[in-house]
Length: 191
Length: 186
Image 1 (tube, rainbow over the protein chains, first blue to last red):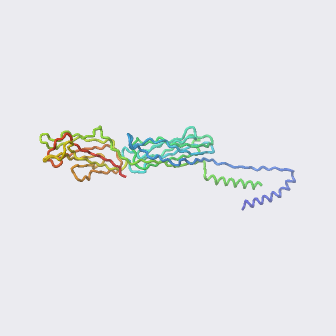
Image 2: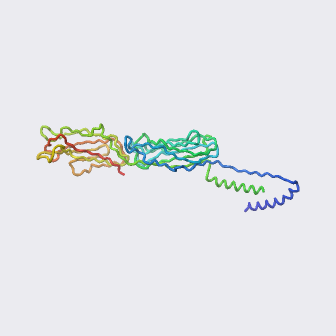
Image 3: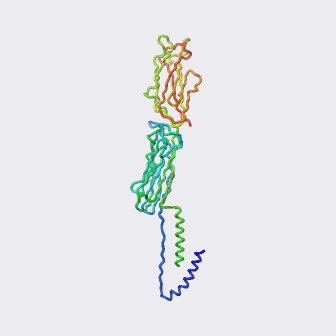
């Protein structure tokens, strides 16, 4: 309501000014500034697929029975990710796959599966981190930052999970396993 | 007009601020779940050395014809056996019987030998099966945790089926069978 009143008041004032200006010259000029701003933004695309299921991870026959089998690299795309400002970096935080069964691990067994998470397409060198959980599942988390991107950038980021391995190549305890990966795009800690 | 323009700009700036709540200079996705599973499984290792026979040799006292009372055989090892979850170990055995001799043993003779088979190293107490007993309460033992290691299979306590007053009929091969089973328990 206040704004509306101001506008009305302005209109009235302008009407009064017109004859006065007309009296001074046959033309007049006023400059009105137009300004705006754009906030610093980083937006990551929706991860596709949104989750990774490795399925059955242990060899069930042969010389490696009970130990981790060869697991193919897993790719996740974050399409249309961007930062509209310079000086940004990726951070990858990963948590090793841990068995849901948290009971004490027996000698010769592991309840952890480590892996490497690599995010490429942001800088020349990818951001990569490898988890280093122990057989008992201790210290499952790992984090690493990538290089600094010196310009605003729009890209499809590729996250690849690879190198799945059990600590000491131990036998894997039975059951479901869960881990995670978090990708963060933001200002570089070392611009 | 100035005031009007300014009002418009303010309105736009306010709108931008509203949109900015959804995005920031930092964005994060995750934690994205990574899942997998390992089925419950057991593996009884191969018999170490590849020799799967308890060779007792001559089982009778050649002077009397009675079963030797001190028969022994070196134990067998099932190396690098494992179960990756709670498990049971079971052992069963069949009496050693004369393979070539046909028909029932004549009076005063026996054609079979009972014994006790034991699988140790997996549980305490060990799994034990006596072929001469009707019930075998110790034949199956449960281990509450995953385990990997060697299982030692032993045969002992040989006795003549029918009693030790019987002599053994002659035969080139007395043979029985010992079976050890590991099973995952959910």
